[in-house]
Length: 112
Length: 117
Image (cartoon, each protein chain N blue to C red):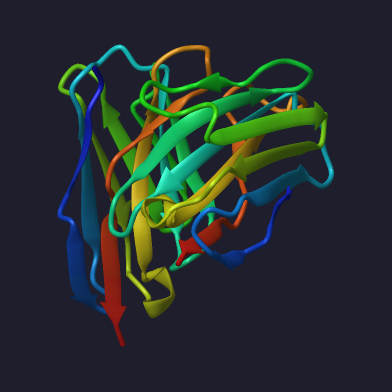
């Protein structure tokens, strides 16, 4: 059974700092991995999707890497801003059923 | 990107009543929609996969008679929590797959916070 773990559970950093969020999964036979952002009491916004054959994806200040063999992914946020404060969730898709298995998230606070 | 509308955003009900939550894809057709629930500070857990025109597929441990799912059209799926109890209080989120895009893209609604008194 696939298990997705995110570390740390919470993170507080001053504005401008670069930071890394971690995601690990137990079964490396994934289709893809996605990073989402969730604001309090809101739905999810997809940030980056990495296919199983890819090593990384970039969007603006965000860079996500994937090491499928070791069951790890990282989300790198450069020059963090207060508007980046949210919960970041990673999720893996195991097969063509499109079902996503989520980690418990990292709550990020960027202090002005 | 595509928009998924979820309604209501918040509902408070008495124990024993039923609550219906709607999930609509506003500008695309979705043959497949998903329903998740999220407890405070926990992750999203998939409850069921809703397929247009057919019965929903429920995840292990989810009571299909308690959580009724109807996907009668390509733009609407509903989740009805029947005879709700306080332990059903949670944040319910739906997502929909846009058939026009790649197979892995899902768009999420803003969620419904259910509080059962």
